[in-house]
Image (cartoon, rainbow, N blue to C red; front, side, top):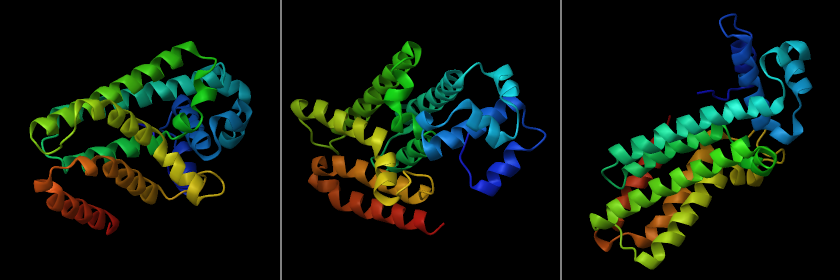
Length: 235
């Protein structure tokens, strides 16, 4: 999994002799896409940032679309593993906080995908199919969690409410990170606060389910969530 770092970290990491050129290209591309948007970055920009020739870049990737495809494939794999782990290990409603944190960490590291979705998939049928599959997997996981806690009588949701709630949570998990960047940074996330964006996304997502909490668990859930948020901010 590729991750975003500060400017000094980026220079130190991608110039490291142990990082192969192909991985360096992916690392720098991901960072540039996240900061400025995939539609605004060219292969020449990537090569310039890396201080290599465009020809060297083209030896590994024929065009920008191949770079984006490789980054998306890795993102899809990471998200898929995270969603599978959620279905296998979540037992208490408060566990959703930890799983959402992991999910939003992955989305933050690849936030250009949801920021530039139309640009990325409009001319790439393979990515369009993969993106649709990813959304379906996320929807299935959300539904699985809701039904599990309905069965435990932690949530009270009717069959008519279930579908719209799944869609609302899905949209929220896809776009809240970039929404936060737009609200708080004029350069659309170039210097956005990662921890603040993730905390905001978790809070907005959990707020969608709080109206459906059973009366018996509302107080304990809100208290536990506040404790986790406070503890997380202390690090």
